[in-house]
Image 1: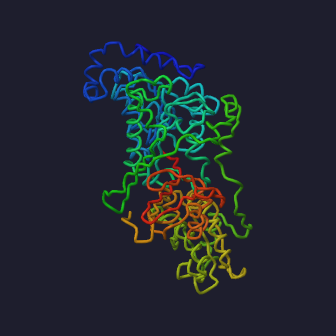
Image 2: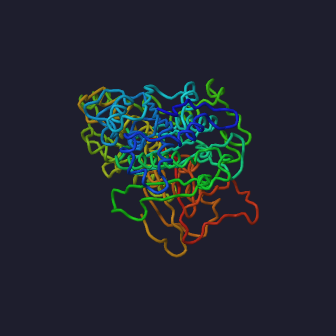
Image 3: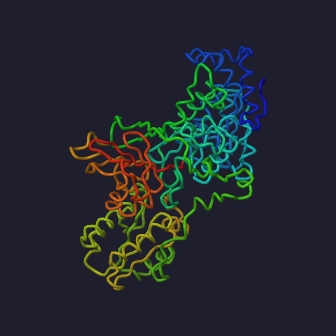
Length: 467
Length: 97
């Protein structure tokens, strides 16, 4: 393919790929390209010039999951010339309700290979580059600097901060999106890219300008734990492709200085980018609140990555500074229960079988959707979120602490056992119950079942429908 | 989600984990409220929400990003006040995909 030039960052902030895009604009389209891309080329503003820019562009899709599948499909269909895809995962059946670039027949295959198989069927013209491994602080800069634009389709904060930092340093625009349960977010960052340390409201923000620090991991759940509706993540992935196509076809990512005097200077719109929020409400019909476009701020003066005193460097990142895993990980666990306040799933089961626990209450703090698939016999569902709310209300309003318990446990010193999904909410629940004085000064046992229903499946009942 | 807030109130929208924490998508709170008091007001209602959600979230008023002042030290004339009828949103980062 013409114009298939390695893009390497050079001193003045432009890239070799930038030049190749400019050169590409003068060549003829092949008959194949002409047929395939005709319907989008006739859209006002796109034209042959926009199409050639796409053909000469290189896009890196990081993550081949719920966002990466639709994002890659639409940029491949649109004819982006080189598409790199990074993912170290394999296709599982539970991915397929949303990861529409994979297939039942490819379960067990590496996601990058599965997605590229699909994309080649869709459009054989682009060059597809598989990276069947994780993006790491060591390999990130080498890979990212080969591309014109990056799409963050990952599923974890560690990689999100790494991608953004490297994009700042090697000056690449970043189209980032995320989704969980019924909510999605999307924004364009670092576009057009400007050198680190130049601070002015004129310059576009990076991910850290928007989200300075990650939330505690306890409040960050994955799609595997919290669930995700296919159309929510799909919508965000398609919108990412839309943003990428817009940026590349109109050359919005070209360095600011080069666009001065250009007859279209739409990059001005991106300096305070829009954060698109999509909420999918299972309880109401399509309403005016489903989409929101929020106006974001510009680059932050004190930003750790792009701000004026930033010490972030590519060398530093490669050698472990900053430490992304530590940055995104939890401080030491806050709950420390005594050994007698904990019991393994196997020991609980054995004691119950032997009749050693004739009268006790078992509280399952999973969300009701998880509980509905199956539970230990006799368990009562009190979802953790509701439990915390009630605990806070009791503390604030001074109501009786027993209000938090199901009616069965109110009157006596009946021991309480608490089980959750993986064993951490249950410990916090035991702690909360004690704080509220429900242990009756030690007369009532309150016990955490170690490892939650996950451990129950492993230790007691392998057929348990654990999700 | 809800429509116009009642007189003397503003609407606050809770996205993603803010919604899970409060078990609400939206509610109406009394206005006017200085922006710097917003997190304290929410912490009173939802114990622990500051550390778990708010400290990491974006805040917007009427669809535009605002910086929530860190402390009580707000220069005179610089005070941002949430007004009756405003729409405030709490937007925690989402990481999954």
